[in-house]
Length: 193
Image: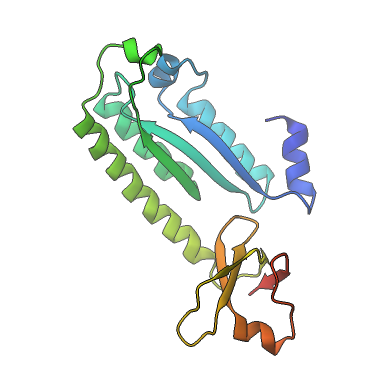
């Protein structure tokens, strides 16, 4: 990420403060076996810099568990990294051996049962982090772009929904709109408090 892009994200009101960083892992040995550059320290520095330079930034990442040769120690390091970095959103995948790839030929393939166990443990940790983040924005002022209808809710007479700038989904009861004579069409921009 260039300094110019970081500056633009921090200063321009029309640029979403949301970044998807597909880090894959934080372990230096794993990253090297994947053919990727970096180390845990460098990734931590990047995340800390982004958070310091772009107030209100939402970070999402994608990680892989069970890459060939991943040790229990490397996996525990990944959990510590996720706990420390507190990604608002995170997707995780179990490594899948594909013929014809360099990784398929690597020794020390991780058993499927171990990959599943690690994936569940990582996602449990992330659910707690995401829940804490979601709770932290309750009661705050958020811009919302209404972009789709939802099924009728109980006693609501239908709902509309859309994302905040940080891609949190917000639903509005259509009765709420009628009080303000708002047009209930996708594309409506509101501020949710």
